[in-house]
Amino acid sequence: MAAEEAHRLADASATAPPKNAAAVDGVAVAAPAAGGGHGRAPGNKLSLVPLIFLIFFEVAGGPYGAEPAVQSAGPLFALLGFLVFPFIWAVPESLVTAELATAMPGNGGFVLWADRAFGPFAGSLMGTWKYVSGAINGAAFPALCADYVARVAPAVSGGGARVAAIVAFNVAISVLNYTGLSIVGWTAVALGVASLSPFALMFGAALPKIRPRRWRATAADKDWKLFFNTLFWNLNYWDSASTMAGEVERPGRTFPRALLSAVAMTTLGYLLPLLAATGAIDAAPEDWGNGFFADAAGMIAGGWLKYWIEVGAVLSTIGLYSATLSSAAFQLLGMADLGLLPRAFALRAPVFDTPWVGILATAAITLAMSFTSFDTIVASANFLYSLGMLLEFAAFVRLRARLPAMPRPYAVPLRGLPAAAALCAVPSAFLVFVMAIAGWKVYAISAVFTAAGVAVYYLMDLCKARGWLTFSAAAADRGGSGGDAMMYRRQGSTASEVV
Image 1 (tube, rainbow, N blue to C red):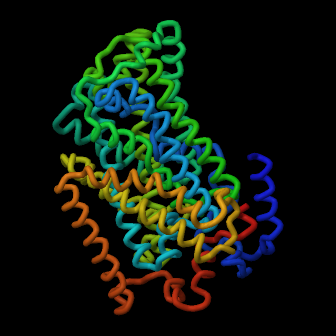
Image 2: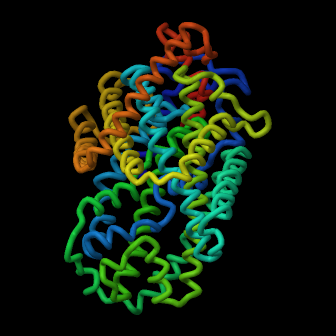
Image 3: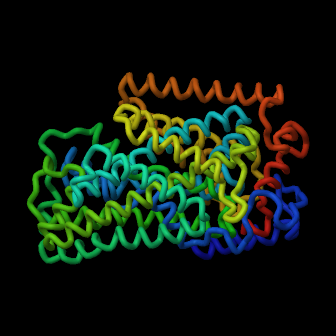
């Protein structure tokens, strides 16, 4: 596989246009002058290791939150789920993300792909579905962090102290994101190491105590809806980092390697702690509520490790919210570059080169939602994410059919449209299953958000036509022969930077 990958990358490099050109459907297009476009200077771009940990935090952030899989079905099914599900869901999604993010390495990611495959309406609707899903997901983290802190400092459990903790958390992570994506990435590395370390120690301490017979236990009353929702919630959002593709150093090489590494790290990050905790202690499935990993660590190694895992949970929520805020802000920037949102969302901070309007808007939305109780809305986030993923898989197949000659520095090693469609078939079937088991409230809320997304698209179109708001100059060229070229040029991604 490594040799084949090297040959593909070498072929892509050999056929790439000169360094001062960008490839658009095989045609060389003049690239912007140095400092132009929205790409960052090469020295400031994300490298491999920070990108791995940003993807890790977009998806998981550690095994925290996996406990309901054991509670709903028992150790046997939880272990099988986290062993098998990455292959039928995480790997296909990662492969599709790797191909499309390297073929179109601009900020906005999946919005860019849907726009290219089906037009601006599909791109805008994709943006609504994924942004709302991500914002709802992100809104849980400040409140969750306050809950974890309250275990150590009970004063934070309610009232003004809790509000202050949530606001301080939000502001601190927003400032971190403002200082630059490279800093956010290396902070994610530190947070990842610190939050995963106690589980490595727990696994080592548990080895002498593991009895394999405990892994065969199952829950008496299985809750399959909770089980599959837990697997889905803990192993999705692999494509979120694609919204920052314009900030990645040589994405043609970096993105596939980062995704492969993140899939392996995330899968082991769930399996090893589950193997240790379920195999080393006798605990009924119903005991496995949220936070039980800390209790299990205390039983295995003592109170010191329980406390460390609780601290790790706080660090994990910091990484989760930081990564979510980054991807959401760069998604808005990409949508503004495409002319789907006003140009204000593409503004960057003068010193740190970060999308400060997108950061501020996303932080404000998630902060407002952090004080609400929204269990049904969280379920709707899964539904909206599923709609977006179905559109993403459709875009992958359509671009394979419509633009077979488009340069793809990394291409999923499948030949022909039937093979590409087959890759997407199993995860698409699971998405339909997740959507089918949702309740009527989820359908209603998702319909409202979708209608709002349609309204936003036509409102932006009206504002553009009437001149009420300022949009990207490149948006005016979308219908012309240079539209696709402008789409690449304003992202600042030259062919030499891709591979």
